[in-house]
Length: 364
Ligand SMILES: *Cc1c(COP(=O)(O)O)cnc(C)c1O
Image 1 (cartoon, rainbow, N blue to C red):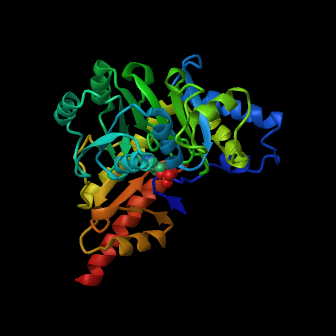
Image 2: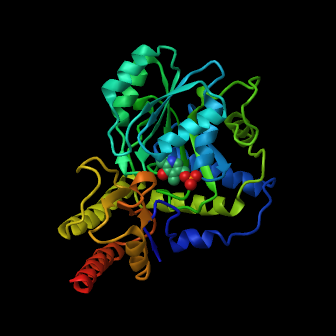
Image 3: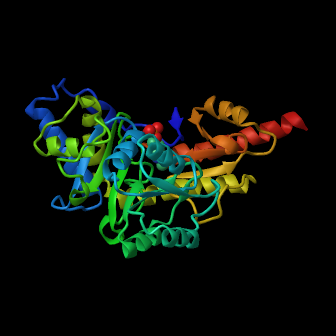
């Protein structure tokens, strides 16, 4: 089965075999070494120096990392601005609400670009904002949000920027230093091609709360994890097997040329699919140049319900992904992350063509 959903992804044989590594206790030195190695590998993806930056590893899906980042880094006297233009931006607001964080939102329709003028106006009206949270790649629509401009505005004002990079880390540019990013949340099982179960936050060391701060959360407190992981420990049991897989996936990625190589490979596959689908009259949801290389959203072909289209593709071994909310009956999504080949995607385009032609013959 070829997974074209935005994670979990198809695994390479290397990564799958890593799951069969020896049983390990999370209090033994072998685990410490594995954990430390992954923390270094994660910083190396974007060439971050260990003196200023730290990778904190968590057992949980991407949302655990988002929740850990937001609940651990916005202090009780801080105020957060959440930018929403999709499901995941709105999820950050839910997290802020649940943790009783003082926050406001800049909301957009899901298919809209972030309104930079509106952002500046809102910040001018709310000079007490200390943190801004934004999704880098809004997987709801495939839009790559303009972090460069948003980060520049935050830097001018001394606002700390928290990024949900769950579906972009490892495949899109993230210039932590130049953009003045404070932290970003991501996961093992999207662009890094690992197994679901491990997620992480990369954070500036100086942004972690001091030891005497009472955390909002026990399980997701980044400061506690960081303190113990720096000493080779872990506050709670980690998902040992998925750690093995993540270490292998990161090694595989580094050998293949790192995030830049992955970016161009994804881009090649996404263009192949986009050109093929457009030639059959299937229209992309977003204008050209707005999408990430990771995922593209398309309007369903005429006469197809999502379920019908999905089921016919699944019968041919391709799993596409539905739209969420209002988009559920009008779009489908195709993500080209994971261990998939160009031939897989060429065949996908041919299969879509065949399904559309068959439906034409059936109906007329
Ligand atoms: C996948 C994803 C998440 C996390 O989802 P989980 O199901 O918790 O892994 C968060 N943000 C974005 C942008 C995502 O694409």
